[in-house]
Image (cartoon, rainbow, N blue to C red; front, side):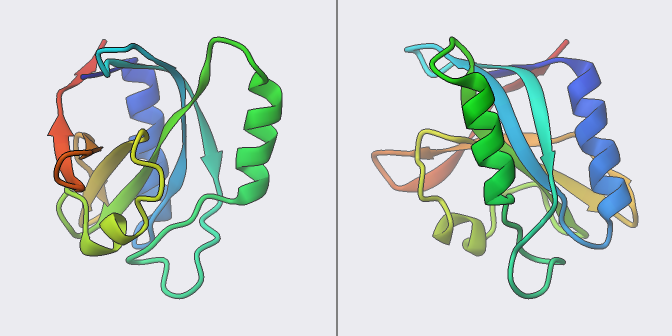
Length: 141
């Protein structure tokens, strides 16, 4: 399960609508419990620096990630995942997403944007047993 404040869900949805018809992206910051319950306390927006067509791929700017990691240091909060949008596609991971899942411990929060309107995000993790994505419950508050 992932817990995320409504205000942050709103920020992600707004970023997805602004970026439409391209993909937006950013980092999820918070904590992870041993039972794989994630809690998001902050997001870090990133420009999409992917090579190629931004309508169907994303890459978080490495400088944004480095800056966040330096800011967080060894504290209790860490980068626990990332978010991105799927313009005019479902909020489920794509084949490209699976190819890019280099960090199986990270949450993938994906928001579908249909005709410029962002829907409720969906969260996924890579199941270590199958190396496929598995949807996890998203609880916003």
